[in-house]
Image 1 (spheres, helix red, strand yellow):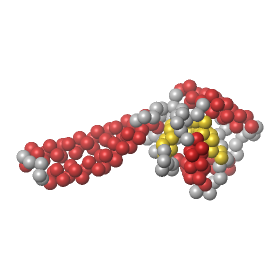
Image 2 (cartoon, rainbow, N blue to C red):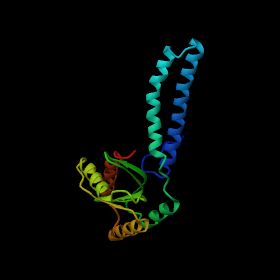
Image 3 (cartoon, rainbow, N blue to C red):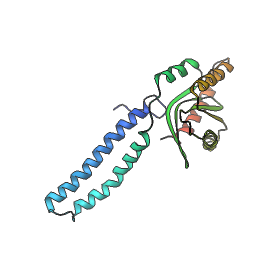
Length: 192
């Protein structure tokens, strides 16, 4: 299986597949150890049962990771193509699942400039204000001050990206590209 990085298109499908396989194998090993103990000792009061119980914990960790990814879908081709067409200057990231103490926010697409993050979520229940504050504060910990915008309308998001791209007549310098990458590396730590 080819490794997928956070923020790349296809990341969610890759993680679902990988975590699904690992979870299935882990629980199969737990079941095999428990059943082997039953067959060998003809009772569940044995060391194999203890080993199976202890192996349930790491197996459950993978299962929880899988459960976190299940409700989220890959970025649509339409959104991906529209975003790529709208801008060619800034850093684009896809399929990000941002976590905080209160809530998980799925962001299928976002654009990172040297001073801001413009993100889109299809979740109408997402708390935009809380997301913006949390992400800005998190990135600020890396000594970066940015403006964060979370939009819930795909057309409005593409329109905003076109406006941001159009407002910058010249290309992006290497220093600004490094800053965008640094912003992404900071924000990425909040992602699953």
